Image (cartoon, rainbow, N blue to C red; front, side):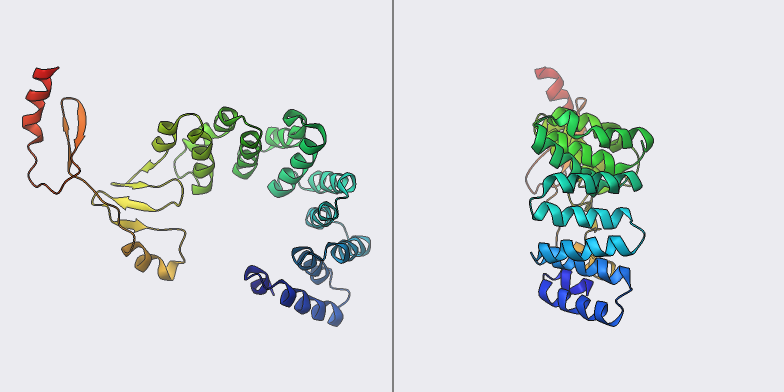
Length: 264
């Protein structure tokens, strides 16, 4: 059923979950999944009814409250959606998706990004190493026109070893708005290769792609072989790195050093 949803075949997903709920009406997991499928299929009124009944029959969870909020947002019942999101986050403050939804609703209501991120900021005080929450805060600040603030949220996290590619991407997108050179500097130079912050692809010094984490493991090697980048001869000279964008062998970088120093 999840495969149907992932392929955009929402009506088939709804039909499959309906069958499950008919066979096992007390299975709250199936009821929750049916509600989510209905919302994705733009049948939000029925989805809201299903998730509300599920909440009344079982122990409420953060995920159920968030699904309820999604249905209420689709129905433009924003005040009720905000209450559902606050309850979701009371149960599970680290839910980045619920934090983002709540902040968007409060921002829409007040126009104040500080007030909109108040609950998120409280969660960040408790979970300072939660990358998803920092990325959520940065996206909200950037959306509010504060790219520098967004970058400041993530700079320390992006400087860590083995930073998740998604976090580097968010950091780079913020930096691109005010200083592209900072975004370029976020490329990871490790083990004789550069890793792109946007896709996570890694290229060696000859321009060969040696890793493409966006691809399934069984197809990764074949994919990497099809996406080389052009490399150019380069070398150090006069305390700088020189590169020539042409196919020239045996470049005399050492001889350039004296010429560069003489003309300085």
